[in-house]
Amino acid sequence: MPTFYNDVDSRLEAALENLVTTQKSVSGSNISSVAVHTGLSSENVPEDIIVCFAESAQETISGTGTWTVSCSVMIYSSADSTGLATHRLRVSEVRDVFMDTDIATTVNADNTEVLTAIAFQNFSFSQRAEERHFVGEITFDVICYGSES
Amino acid sequence: MATIAQQLASDFDAMIKDFRVTVTFNGSNYYGTMSETTKGRELDEGGMYTDVDAIITLKSGDFSTKPKAGDKIMLADCFECSLRYENYRVQSVEYPDGVTLRLAIIGLNQK
Image (cartoon, rainbow over the protein chains, first blue to last red):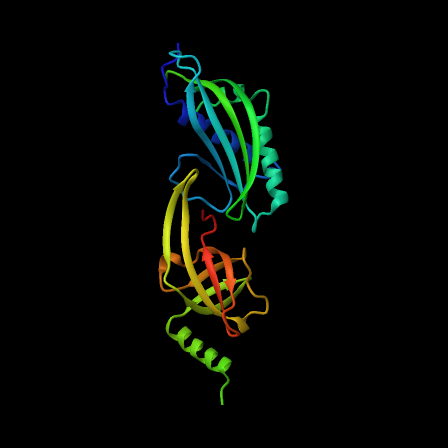
């Protein structure tokens, strides 16, 4: 039985960041030059950024240590420097990273984060303009538990 | 006898001599003066966002293509070293007279 809580939100944030960082190195990626940060970070934010944020966690079944974590991945592209066409390509690429049928398996294969993902579900998208930036946001829930070690 | 515009330009040249800042825009340097400046770091989702507010006054006639809102400029030289060699976003451009223009600048990712 998984340990209660076990820091699932920060582990999941880091795992999501790793997924996007891996995607950056794919040949022809539209996000190769974009910084990726976790939601809670003290790093300086550059002009364009992708933020992987585990916003809240709710225990799926009481006492089991399995959590439903609400996550957002936000893609910020400068309207002045980057432009809309590139922004749309970035959003599309990041969306495809997460809307993959094998996404839970991929997260579990990440040896740097001690976390077991059971399912990614309830995907939704939104977009907005904010302070001269185009923003694309992908939200979803992850059912997971933090492993023992 | 000097026109008012000529007098303004002359006065502004004198200010630049004493309180000069150098702005790089589209690969060229321009000289002007800068207001008092506030620089902060705002914490939000994703990390620390640089928060800068300043007004730079430049000679309108120095530009063949004038800066517009959204353009990027660099402060190549100014009175505060922590502001130098950084890029900033032009938030707005004000034309107070026929001689000068005022750029309101902010950090590139300012919220």
